[in-house]
Each structure stands twice: as C-alpha cells, then as structure tokens.
Length: 198
Image (cartoon, rainbow, N blue to C red; front, side, top):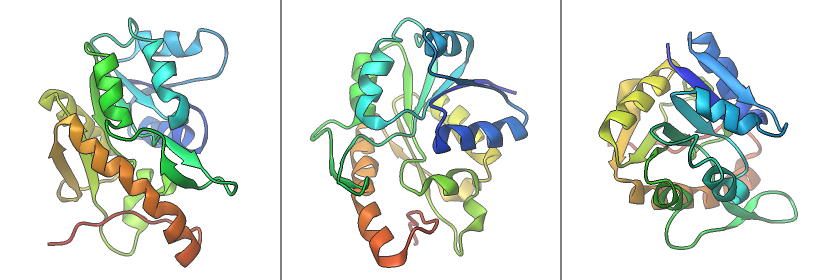
C-alpha cells in the first residue's frame, strides 16, 4: 500500500483515485479549498499531478517544500487549446513541462507517464482492441520502479510499459498530444492510446 495524493479532481484525477483506491492504496484527492494541495502533498509518498497542464508549473512550484523528497507523477499536458477545447499547440516549446518541473523542484523525483492516451484508458488499458504502450520518463530509477508498480495496479501489463530514459524524453511524449484533435475528428471521441509494435 502506498500513500498517494492526487492534485486535481476532474475526470483524470477522479478516475485515478477510484482505480488506485480499489487496488488497495491510501488515496487522497485534494479539493480546491485553500491549503488542501499543500496538506495532501505533505502527507503523501507519491503525488500525482492531474491539474490542467497550463497552470501546473506555477501550482507545483508553490508546493516546493511539501514535495521535497516525494515522487511527483506528472500526467498533464501543457497545451494551448482551440475554440473546441482541443489542443492546437504546446504551451512550452523546448523543455517539456516535466523537465521544467524537475528543474524547478530539484529535490523531487518527477516521473512523466500516462499522458499519451485518452483519460479513460489510463485506468482501463485492457478495454482497447489491442495492447497499448505507456511510457515512463524520469531521472530517478527507484522512483520509476515505484510508478511502474502503480501502473501495473492500474491494469498495465509489464510488457506494455516502456521506460524511455531521463526526463528529457518527456518532450516526445508531451508532443504526442498534438495527435489528439486529429484522431478525435477522424475516429470520434472513443478511447485510444499510442501502441509501439515490434
């Protein structure tokens, strides 16, 4: 059992909370009340950032002390959205959101994952018609192993998990969000994810 706090109580945060709680973890979801995020981060071993990516950097830097020594799982994509709410560009060109978080929070172990799929797939990968791939990016090997275990608890098989290496590899996975509006327009709003086949 891992003590996990989730920042963000939208579809992503709520879905992850339900699935991780069902897997036997001690999960807290921070609401929007003053101090809730700080309290949640302070009491957890793993903190999941499920807040909107365009404001994540500012929100999490404000929690620098509470996140010291913790694993920060970043599942957000920082995007510029079009009139239909779908991403049309990346907010950060060059260093990814995950890289910027790791630079701003040097005493926190940032791990990027679960950001290359529709939110419903995060907790139900086996519902797709063929195996999907979930990626890990981060500097700390031990932190990534803990996150790998959480992914398995969410239903991801070991062979579906690919460790890409350091946090700089998150530039590639964050850019994959630009596929999303085109896939949705072409195939409809149905669950999908990236699959690497060899």
